[in-house]
Structures are given as structure tokens and as C-alpha cells.
Length: 339
Image (cartoon, rainbow, N blue to C red; front, side, top):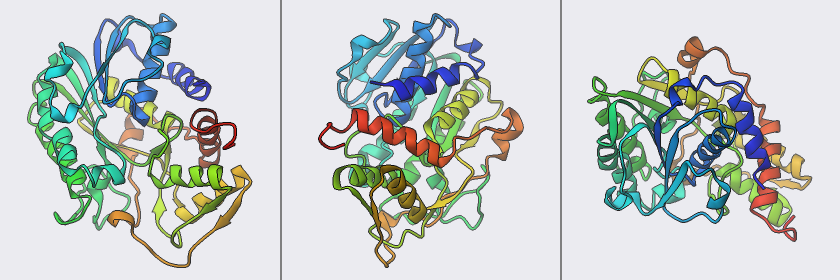
């Protein structure tokens, strides 16, 4: 059922130095999201292979139906983290991966207070569960560069988003979390990962991000249809590459802030064309320009800091990543009738 995700996990195990994981206690929030679910599956495979001895607490809002498939070293806990940590009965951790921060614009614009809380006060709460010298890995976002005059953006850049912008709670919530964590960098290892447009297997049905919506329309409606001219430019990063960068930063990174994302750029129009080609369905486009929830016109980051430390990454090409994503979604999100 999770074959594509397991293949990606096996690939990562063969490439990563995970010695600091030995004997540790790990917390992963947002464990049912795209990055969180792939991270948990990666840890699960490590434990099942007996590669390392460690424990994981996995937090998510809703119960998962397949917890019995996981190694006994992974403990699932459920609840709404935006309300606080009290009901999770957390212990002390050597690594905290905070991924429970709402990545979909349709959600974080509707749940503004929860988004601000998860990226602000909850970050401070969670940091108190770190063991001395422990590592807090905060999943931030490339959206903090929105409005920047520079492109691609370095880690020293900053955008200019109006506080009236519907995306402001997400952007400024992430910035709050970053600033809060940097205040304790002398006590703990703080690693801030500014992630851009990760995609791949592990999403949920109804995911409103453009790439997934185009796939869902192609499968359900037998056509890929854009609602505008598709001129916006994006740099997508397949989840396996995102995780490789994230885990290198978490376990071996030498400084606090890293850009994590792809290097190739594509327009939404070309993305739609490629998805229609893979699905063998028609492609339609509207001759107009829309801005969905004030989304940025172009997203691109400079990852030279990461590459200088860890070397160049052999990124999964967009066409291959889409093939793997579509294959997984067909098997896991849609019935045979929909296929």
C-alpha cells in the first residue's frame, strides 16, 4: 500500500549519516501530513531493519487506521496541538520535528488563530520538552520571502507581506517561531528549515494545493483544467529530496537557518500539461490571471548554503516525481472506479 513511500525511505537510509539518532527520543508533530507521514515511515523502516535503536512519539490531530503496521518503538498520540501540549503527556526529547503547522493555504487562511498559535506559543511550549543540548527542527516556509526584491532568495533575505494579507498569519506566525527559537540557540541546537513547495506521496484526499488539485481533477474528471493562464512560476521539490535535505540539516547542520527546496522552475501551465500527459487526459486553460488567496507570483530559493555544506543533490526530475505521486494517489486516495 505504501510501496512508493517505502522505496523513498530505503533510498534515504542508504544515503544518510544517522549516527546521532542512536539511543535518542524523537518527537514528530503533524505526523499525518505530507512531510510528517514520510518522516514517520522513514523512522519506522529504520527501526524494523534494526539499523538504530531509538523511540518516536508521533502527534497528529486525527487517528490513523494503520498503526499496527508500525514498529513498537513508534507511539502515536492524538489531539489538537493548537490548544496546547497538556493532553499529550510528552516526555523529554533529543530531537523535536515541528511539522504541525498547516501547509495548505485554504486551511491556514481559514484557521488563522490556530496557525498563529501553532507557529508561535506552541513552539515555545514544545521547546521546553528538549533535553539539554537537544535539537529543535522547525519547519518554516519560503513564503517569508514573499514581496522580496531579491530572487532567488538567500537565508538573509526577508519579504514584505502586508499584515492585511490573508496569508499574513502563516507568514508572520513562521517568523515568530523562528525568532523565538533563535533566542534559545545557546542552550539547544536550533535548525530552521525554510521549505518550498514539497510534493509527493503522503497527501490526503481533498488537499487544496495546486499540484494535488490538478492531479485530482485529472483522475476524477478525466481532464486537467487551469482556472487562469498558469503564468505563476514555481520550484517544486519531491518529498524524498525535501527529507534528505531536512534530515541532513537536523542531524549534521552547522548553522541555524537553511533554505530547503528544488532548483528547477516551472510554470503552473507547464505543470498542468505534464500532469495531463502522464494521466493521458485533456488539458484546458483559461485566458485570464487570478491570484488565489494572494499567492506569490514566483517562488524560488537559493540553496547554495545547503550545497556548500552537504554537496549537490541529485534532484528527482519533476516528471518522475509526478509519476510517483500520481501512482501513489491512484492506489491510496482513489477507488478503482475513479481510476
